[in-house]
Length: 274
Ligand SMILES: C[S@@+](CC[C@H](N)C(=O)[O-])C[C@H]1O[C@@H](n2cnc3c(N)ncnc32)[C@H](O)[C@@H]1O
Image (tube, rainbow, N blue to C red; front, side, top):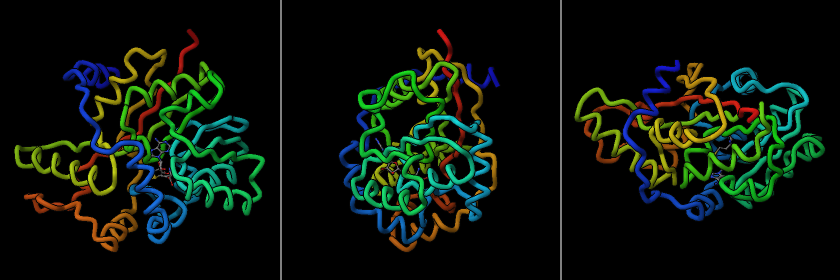
């Protein structure tokens, strides 16, 4: 495990490239597309998920290491489907952040309907700047469930998360990254899939080592980086792409559905006490 992380640190230096999608583009995308997400995904906008959402929630609690009485930030919370299910399973407080005003309104309503307004505080804002509107060294955990991929400044996003996390607290990121090519054609196709995803789903799909490198100077230790620990049900994501005719397979030569060209990882770090 440590060798693996060292190899990632030692890989090519991270180049600052112009992000494909700016935060304001991402915000507009979710203002325009939230209803379509709800039509396909329901309350949980994750492309790698389980149809059994209570089981997914239990998995996330275990993998992220969420414990009773923790104060958590759900960074990129959607309409709070995951936050509500987490609070129904375990007694925690959540500050849930989304860029989208539309999502904020829907989330607040859902939280109230679930009787969890004293547990979940929904905030409309940019998680890359959350250290300017949330207390520093204050949270037991920060979770990103397929939201970090949208960030247009990896270093800023990591710094903000580290700043608000308590020493001893954790940051957990479940997300998708550039896939692993086995030959030159796949390498080209992966680049194309990333380009298509960035363009049509307003992502900034990263290479895993870029995210690892952003933690390099932070007071953290890596707990794990692992491939997604469950066999995901992918029909919901596939149906969303088909129904909305999103051309993610455009200009791909290999006869493989685009999702095969993206790798899903879970990453967890703990903030140190110095
Ligand atoms: C694919 S959805 C996932 C939503 C949620 N985590 C879930 O599992 O249902 C991505 C979410 O990230 C949010 N997001 C993306 N970039 C953000 C940013 N810079 N600040 C706050 N939220 C952001 C979007 O508003 C959206 O709610």
